[in-house]
Image (cartoon, rainbow, N blue to C red; front, side, top):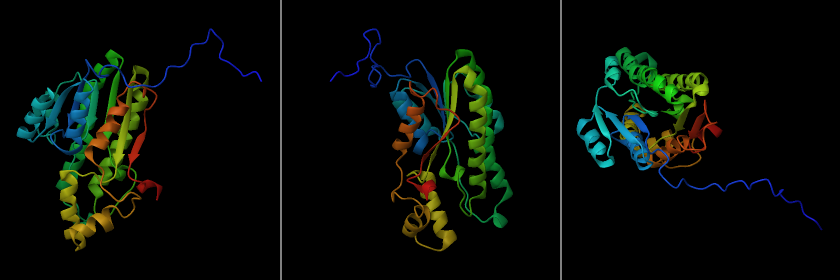
Length: 268
């Protein structure tokens, strides 16, 4: 029996393989909240892929230590101060908006100043950073925006009005940037994990225990991972790998999306 064959003039499709050289060599990345947790893992991964990383964090010693470790540049700033963004470099090819904070309280007891602070750091600051860095990406015809959102950018939980509001807003900002930036070779996406083993989550465990009047062990098992099919915390390095993939050479058509890493939470 004769089988069909590719015509001699048609080249075979190349097999997918890892780039021979670091695919971000010559690129510059800016990562906020980069001194610990997800931000630290992202900075390390981007540097390993060849990027020069601007390590942005208010924890000076940790930021400078990480910058020294990965050959990056530390920027010790408080992102709750709007004017600070104008002191950061504007030439980033990759922006990872990761900085965040949390406060747990019912809406009727939530401090308005704390609510405003969370919006300032987690919504206004990413907007200001992108407003500053997008023109350079447009000029160079390439860029990657990765916003570290959360399952709480897609779903809500009680007692987290400010955080849920901010993450939903970040998801919206990310989509708008995706639409505006597409013609310039720039993509914009969110990575939306469930609970990641970070200092922020460790603090949440203690806060939730006080709010619910239960043990910290019960917070993890009964509150945090109740809706997750996979009953373990996500590691920061796993989130960083997703971020790195979105900055890779074969993801130019992935934009305006939210990549869920929630252990099945949003499928429940």
